Structure formats: structure tokens, C-alpha cells
Picture 1 (cartoon, rainbow, N blue to C red):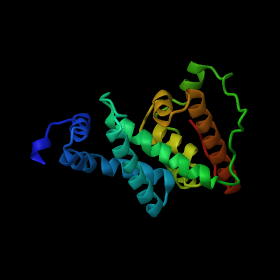
Picture 2 (picture 1 turned 90 degrees about the horizontal axis):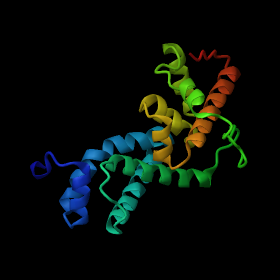
Picture 3 (picture 1 turned 90 degrees about the vertical axis):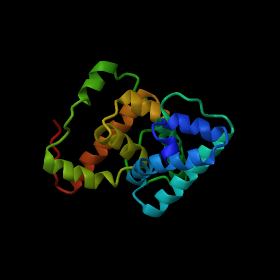
Picture 4 (picture 1 turned 180 degrees about the vertical axis):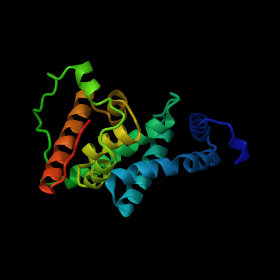
Length: 198
């Protein structure tokens, strides 16, 4: 819609709060592809992704009407966070089996900032062939682990950004990455694949 050209997502959200329903239509058309891609990558099921996408937008509309959105310049971040919460709520009910998960008393506070973060900052984790194998095995990871791998390696987000977006601490994000790598190595070993981490 030409009326909304040049407007930010945040401005559209505020227009919608003010009663302009067409502003929401524009906002939806701008964000739906990126959000659905994110959801689909995490859940790996088209029907489930559709359900989660719809539930996410129901929650978005509700939160906008309740005044729970303030213009922070990060509408897509806010939207992705809501989708993340919907996904995690769904998976808590399903609980994956036979995958290494951290225990409730898992304490990663003994890991210190810079040295841990430096070890994950490589732009390339594996060579081309290993990356293809990793993509196949990622589908078998629990959603929180698959999500952190996706955000880190495909969206190039820092662990702080991942922590903020998923509503957990940096240590929890690092822990999820650690468990994801452990699970990937375990699957590689069981399938006689050799993962060479840089």
C-alpha cells in the first residue's frame, strides 16, 4: 500500500494500536515470510508452523490492544520473541525423547565470558560437506537447541542477542549450543560421520 511506503514496522504497529486496521495488514505482509521461515526452521512441520504462526499473531494482536508494545525500534525482534515463546510452550507439552538435555541444576556459571564466546565466534564451523551433514542432523535436535544453532550460524546473531530474543541468560544460550554440539557429535558417531570443527 502506497500510503504506508517508507513507514517503519514500529510506526505501523502504533498506527494499528490507534485504530488503523490497514496498517496491521501492511505489517503482516512485511513480516510474515521472515517469521514463518523462522518458525518452520524450528518446528520442521508445515501444519504445526501454520498453527504456531497463527497463534503468534493472535498473541501479537492481543498484546498490541492491551498496550504491551512500546516503540523500541525492534518490532521484528519483539515478534520473533513472541513466536519463540509460543514454540517453547508447545514443545514443553511434547517433550522430546532420547536427546541429551541439561538438568535443572545445570550450572554453567563456571564458564567465563570472553573465552567461551571466542570459541563460538568463528564464521565457518565446518567445511562444506560437514555443513550438509550438520543440516540433516539438526532436524533431530530438540527445538531450543535447533533454535540457538539456527540463530547463531544462519542469522549470525551473537549469544547476547540470542539470549535477549529467547528470554534466557547468555549461559543458557551457550549451554544449549554446547548440548546441540554434543548431540550432533553423538549422531555423527552413530552414523559413522566425521565432524571436523574448526
